[in-house]
Length: 53
Image 1 (tube, helix red, strand yellow):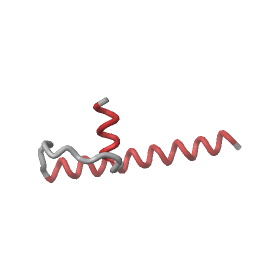
Image 2: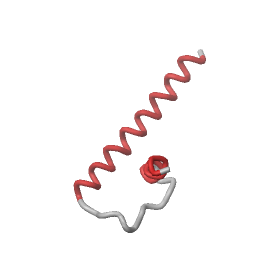
Image 3: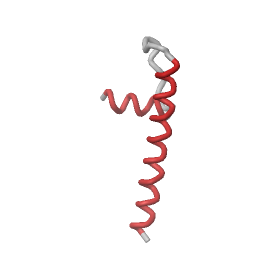
Image 4: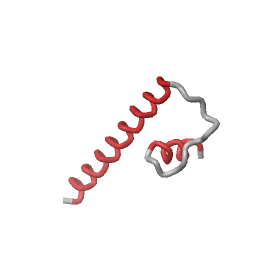
């Protein structure tokens, strides 16, 4: 369940954990992870559309 909770936080579906440590580099890492997850989801949608045509 930890993975799904983290993905939900990246996509702003769940509130962030207030006990998590805060640092600039951690903030950048989460931003990059958020971008990569969104691009992956966009690619899956594009593949699904191509396969259904």
